Image (tube, rainbow, N blue to C red):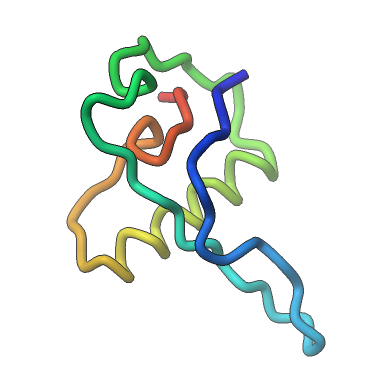
Length: 78
């Protein structure tokens, strides 16, 4: 299980109208130890992994980035 020490700016939640609010994930930087770990492969894309993907895409777009890897948001997964 990856360490979950990265802070979320917004928590995942469901608004009163049923719209999902995405999390803006904190990007970690060197010398954070997660960046030195070998990322573990995932077996399948389940709802947790899909939420992570959605949150990563949203966070990347908000920061006007061009790419983002799970270890950069403190999740040691491939």
